[in-house]
Length: 292
Image 1 (cartoon, rainbow, N blue to C red):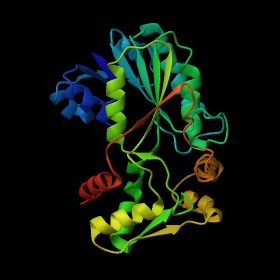
Image 2: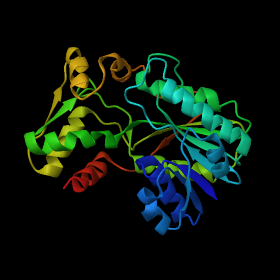
Image 3: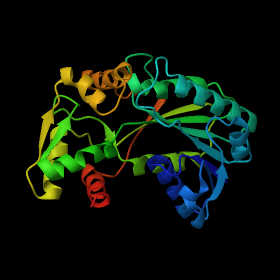
Image 4: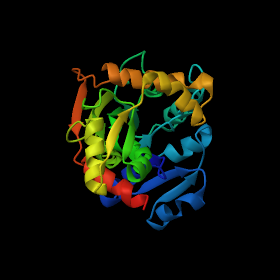
C-alpha cells in the first residue's frame, strides 16, 4: 500500500497512475471524496483528512510501504512563509509517528539554496524539516513545470503571442512534464535505501521562451511570438491578477533567481540526476486539447 497526497492534482495524479499501472495498491488522502470519485472507481482507497490534521494523516500513513508527500504551493505567501511552515510541521509530526517504510517528497530545482529563492523557499523549508526524520527520505527536485504554459494557451491561440517572464528569450531553461515527475516518484517509492536522497529531474532537453512560441505556432498552425514582459511591470501585472501588493515579492524573487542562473540544479556529489521523456510539444498538445 502506498499513500499519496494530492491525487486530484497533476503530480499526485501522475504518481497514482504509475503505481496503479505497476499493480500497486494506492491510498489517497483527500478532503472531499466526491472530487476523487473517479479514483475510487479505479480502485484507490480514499481517506478523508486535511493537511492540518496530524492524527488523520498519521492514520493514512501508518502501515504504508511508502508515502508521497507534497505541500500545496502558495503563490502569494505571507512574510516568513507561515502557511508552508504550518503544513510541514504537521506532516513531519504525522510521518514521525506513523513511521512508513519510506517517504518521497515533491521539491524543486534550487531548493538546496538557503536564500534568493522566492516561492521555491517553500521547497527549501520542506527539505530542511524532513531530512532529519528517522525514515528514509527522497526529495524530487523537479525543474520548471512545462504545464505552467497553460496560461499561455489562450493568448497564443487568440492573439498569437505569449508573455515571457523568463529571460533572455533565447536562453534554454530546465523544464519537465508533471507526468515524468510522477513516474520518478512512483519508481522511487518502490525502491529501498537509507538516509536522504536528492533526485534532480528535468526533461529530455532545455527549452527557451522562443522554443515555446515556436511550439505553439507549429501546433496552432499560426504565427506566435514571445513578448518579454519588462521587469518594471511585473509588480503591477501581478497585482492586476489579484495578488496583494505586499505579497508579490516572492514571485518576483523566484523569477529573478531563474533569470540570473541562481536557481538551477546543484549537481553535487550527493545528488542524482534524471531526465524525463516527455517533450514540450507533447505537453503543449495536451494543454491545447484540454482547453478545446
